Image 1 (cartoon, rainbow, N blue to C red):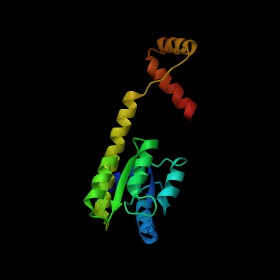
Image 2 (image 1 turned 180 degrees about the horizontal axis):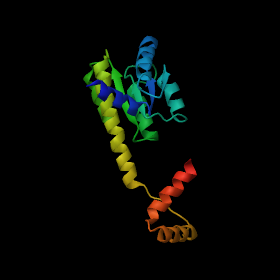
Image 3 (image 1 turned 180 degrees about the vertical axis):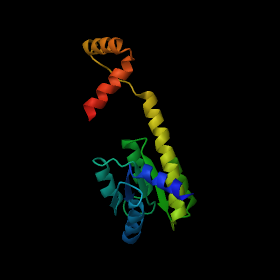
Image 4 (image 1 turned 90 degrees about the vertical axis):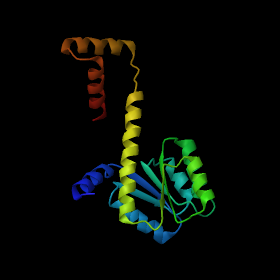
Length: 181
């Protein structure tokens, strides 16, 4: 990867937020500080229970979770997150070579798996994949976007579209941009 590619990647990831769920304090701090280089915001949690509670209020773009943790392991955490948000991007970060745990995480539907120790090359490759996943997710959301307008408003949009010789959708998009500014 060239330095220009890395700059472009960072520009994309700096628009995103992340959550780190790792019960080993030193590992949590190391992973969080590494990810802060790439993400706009990184929140970290030392337990899956605390992270799950926070998840309902803080919807990160990407979750990095360890498999082996205290009361609730990363697999159970991923299951519960999936029940709240089926399209959440979840990355398992683990030193475990336990095939049954890896299989269980795949069954839950985690998006990716990265093995500890994590080096910069692994992080960069992973982030390239994350950007790709988010791009695909946005394309799907864009294709399924629809809006319902009250009939009188729709007629107004139709008139404005005729006057300006543009599509109704162009008028609606402009109105939405103005509304959300």
